[in-house]
Image (cartoon, rainbow, N blue to C red):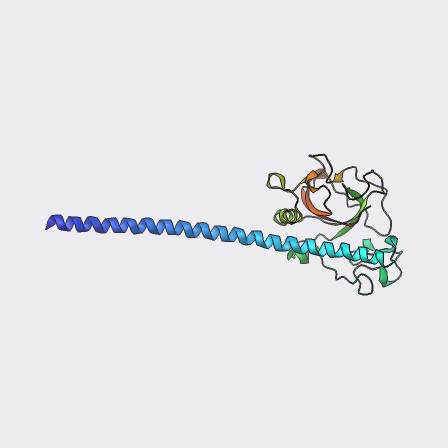
Length: 239
């Protein structure tokens, strides 16, 4: 009788230990799955925001090109909705305003709106001092600089997704690095005589983000001048 009781107790203890082990296993599986779901959700949110920035910047580029085809002079293009610094006094009617219903007709949206981040305070900038390698001529003069739409301080996760969408390699898990992208004076009809000697997507692996070679839009890591920021660019007019 005692042996039977001991056997029953042993069996019960075995079942209890088995249940504890199964519970620990299930808890681990659920925890790992929850972590994977959270990570996948974060990646998908970053991808959606990356697509918003890319699609909007591309629509600005398409608007600029359409306006040029319709007879608006490049020197008259007006981006005043971005800031007063972008006011082009050559533009004397709404037909040359990019973000006006009487001109380009595209609604102005800030980077913060596209990022769904009210804490993001950086505005768009239309620059004339940079060259994108293989986007036009390569000489270091202001006849070869592109008209660029730039957004700075892009979150890293979104920057990486922009590049994945664009087919730009994020080497070592980070965005291609470039020594500097010059914002300079905002475009108001003329191109600056200051020219960045560094090309976006150039051949220098350390300073020019060669992974972005020939890409009209992308995101790079600026490490020069103490910046250490992620910057998105879109070519509006290649030259």
